Length: 113
Length: 111
Image 1 (cartoon, rainbow over the protein chains, first blue to last red):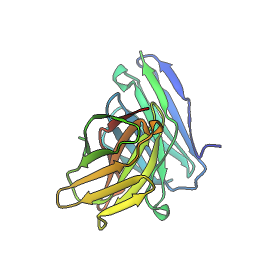
Image 2: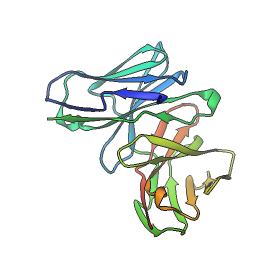
Image 3: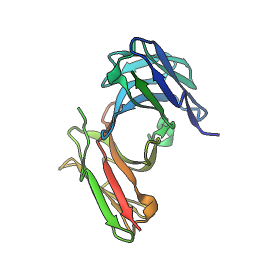
Image 4: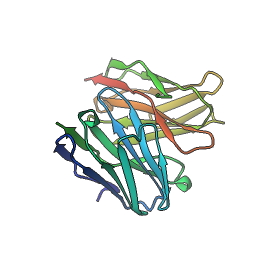
């Protein structure tokens, strides 16, 4: 089984709808991240969390919110989706003890019409 | 804004040739990492080099880091068609654990 899983893998939604993307990990890592990737661009950090009670804004947090329900779960919400939030979304984990490398989920392809 | 900028944006080479891609960044870093992404999939960690290191090897990969120039290079030797992917550098700034990714180099290895 994959160490970092994301659901759903693909989602098409309409403008104004609320949508939640979920991420689960079995690596036992404390740190979790949400990124978005737009075509031809690198990843941009949306939010990150270093433990269950810690939430931090990244580079592009406007229009997004997150919840760290447990060490293993980190969800990303779009309260009112808009077309320019159409992108590929990735969840990632890392752990200081394992040397800072990040482990990525397979991604969620979100389309807002 | 992106801290890491990769150069070139795209690279096409023949199988067996070496591929070199470069990354520049703007601020002090704790470490710099290189990742690989196959089309539309999650990124996979390749190699990490710390700010006090100048060169690191892993299999066919060689990474260099020049902190005075705020730049790094990734060399893939004896490339294979399976190396076709996008390659990203990511910097972790000193004092934080925020990862800043570059815009990537798209490598195509022709068989």
